[in-house]
Image (cartoon, rainbow, N blue to C red; front, top):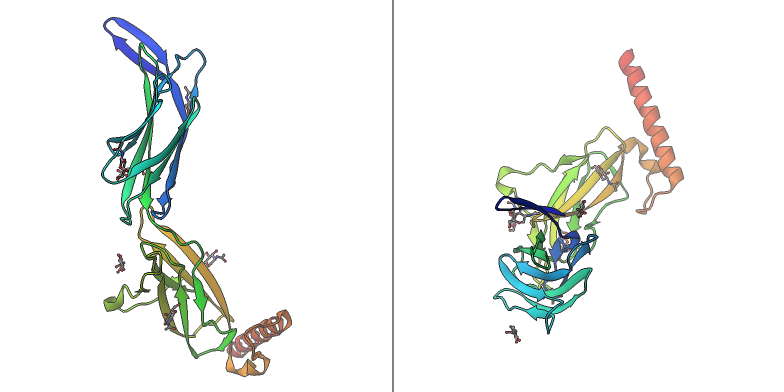
Length: 279
Ligand SMILES: *[C@@H]1O[C@H](CO)[C@@H](O)[C@H](O)[C@H]1NC(C)=O
Ligand SMILES: *[C@@H]1O[C@H](CO)[C@@H](O)[C@H](O)[C@H]1NC(C)=O
Ligand SMILES: *[C@@H]1O[C@H](CO)[C@@H](O)[C@H](O)[C@H]1NC(C)=O
Ligand SMILES: *[C@@H]1O[C@H](CO)[C@@H](O)[C@H](O)[C@H]1NC(C)=O
Ligand SMILES: *[C@@H]1O[C@H](CO)[C@@H](O)[C@H](O)[C@H]1NC(C)=O
Ligand SMILES: *[C@@H]1O[C@H](CO)[C@@H](O)[C@H](O)[C@H]1NC(C)=O
């Protein structure tokens, strides 16, 4: 990194350390410590490393000064604290205990300064949101293997435990579920589990009316974090028209041959109808 310093009438070009990568997880689980790592390089001919400082917001939480004894120092702040720090001339990692306040956004800064006389300083900032993200895709239950045109179905979508809890949206053939204006938000949230995490669920009631031989359902579970954390699951339901009921299987698993027969029948049916309409 090149820093221009104007000193009186002199223009001095000073090189400094460069931060190559700052590792701050986007989401931090308050049940475990967050590991933050700052990677930096010493450009050729640079003066040596003076110090590496970690800040949470504006509060300094940790300092590494290789030329001092002891080289590391931890500062206590009200919200979180550093339990471990391990630094050398190339990287500096700290473990931080996070507050159990979900959806809090914490900003962490790594600041690297080069030895005097100029003490050139470089820094990088990244945010972490306190959240436990969904570890798995949501699960759709109650999906019948096939269904007849005009029938009603009720399916259910449930998320893995998470915090803050996810909001669930349903899509039918890529279109958002039609909801009455007074029930915009009808995601249900379970009680907390042993870790204080909550699952969300939302059921979808639907009358099957599609000209195609199948229905695409999509459940999207989005945690209201910043940035929002979304996971989703798709399900396909084969729709048969009552004429074809002799081909429907009783089980939920349908073989490829049956599916092929169905599609063939639907295709024949469609061509029959179009032939009729041409008369
Ligand atoms: C400093 O590192 C960044 C990558 O983080 C790189 O894009 C940039 O070119 C580097 N600057 C110098 C002067 O090496
Ligand atoms: C920082 O706080 C922790 C507990 O909150 C305490 O155990 C530790 O001694 C404190 N450290 C300093 C240097 O004050
Ligand atoms: C970090 O969060 C602050 C607000 O807390 C926001 O202003 C800033 O743009 C965020 N930075 C990044 C890199 O997302
Ligand atoms: C949906 O699933 C959740 C748990 O996964 C259950 O508590 C709820 O009763 C189910 N709802 C319906 C309408 O089946
Ligand atoms: C799920 O369905 C959506 C459209 O509803 C589609 O864009 C997406 O690619 C599908 N995902 C998978 C894994 O099939
Ligand atoms: C839905 O409800 C949850 C919790 O009750 C809330 O956090 C979220 O903002 C609501 N979403 C909408 C779109 O109203």
